[in-house]
Image (cartoon, rainbow, N blue to C red):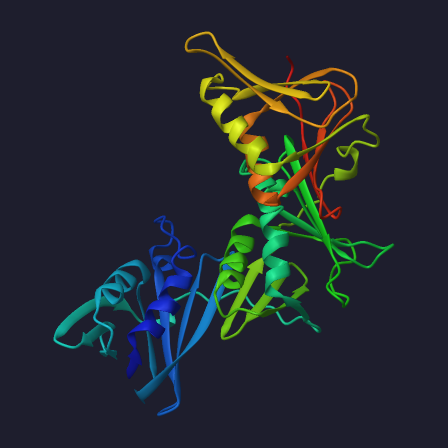
Length: 373
């Protein structure tokens, strides 16, 4: 293999795979990136990586003098390329699987492995792909992924559930860790196959999808499902992920059927007040108490080892008094994910979950479980 490629193209492709390569030593080769050159003057350098659950392949334009393939450390190659000057990079693989890298007057030789030793990437071939706006998908991911569980013993909660709503045909993403829940509905304009019973996309796969839609020139994304795999195509990048096998819980049971206390408040005002009061909350529970009264909201915290804090906020509220407590981190995560100017908080009583809804988007919802006072 021998080729020349602009430094920025090589760096972009390598940056995409850094969080996918497996850093643990169960299979050392999973810490590598597979480089495969095809074509000639209008050739392509394929960069691929997998952790056996998520796989990514990107195509970067290059001048290929000699096709071929090799696999080397993804982290070390990225570190080298990142420090090179903004010029074309010459890459050559030797017969004994060493990779020679040259740019301007800098030269490196990196030990690698034969391409045949690299595991096969996950594959999927859905019959139909849905074309979605990158901006819409980004917002759906942001408003749900924060609520996905990181507890590996509850594997069916370690991702985001996607289903098609039968009554409206809209696509819903929902995630919960048992303490909070977030969902968002969007009309993507077409049916997505493979969603008869919904699918659970793993947290890592969804994080990689978000990185793709976050790229400046990403406008549209193709997405589809087949069996227990999901496939995403965005520009010159293909992402394949193994779906979580298991049944997602009946999340509708968590959502309050009715609420009698409602208050509208500026998101930034509430978020900053919670952050300040939480500074003196107990380290373990991070509890902040809400005391709701006529035209008045008091946030307070108490830590026997440190002291106490409270902050008063003027609000437009005329209902009954209510005292309820929450984990401050859960509230701040919800408010940050919703990212809107104003939110409506809906309460039933001090033992019932609270709802947080953007005032400009009734199709987004966050639910937070209360703490005992």
